[in-house]
Image 1 (tube, rainbow, N blue to C red):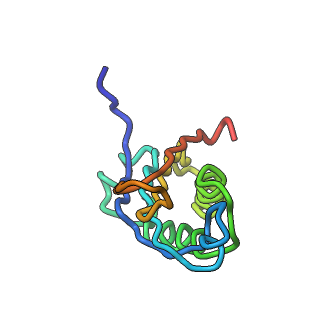
Image 2 (cartoon, rainbow, N blue to C red):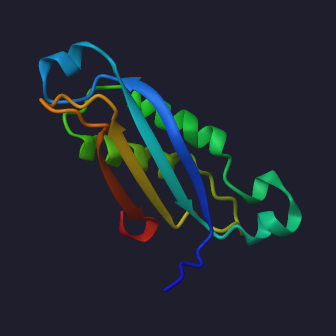
Length: 132
């Protein structure tokens, strides 16, 4: 089945944060890589070439960076949920505009604290606006 939903994709945002269970992770910032998918009807933006008819991804990036650079989370799952909540709260919907339907966030530790070589460890969460 082909997914015909409109999606804004943000890939590879790198922000330092102090998240994790280990004491070392709490004391020394490490890089986290974040991907975001925003599902919303983008037909009005495509037809009008009007920024106000889409999502300003610059403000979304700022929201994500604020969460990752903010207070400590032990689990990546909790960090990803906090990012999703911040995105839903920060994306304005003007009367008559299409709402933000769904957000998918992937968070990866690029230096996971394990005993073997590994590129990253991460989680991907998807939340629909109508099921938050």
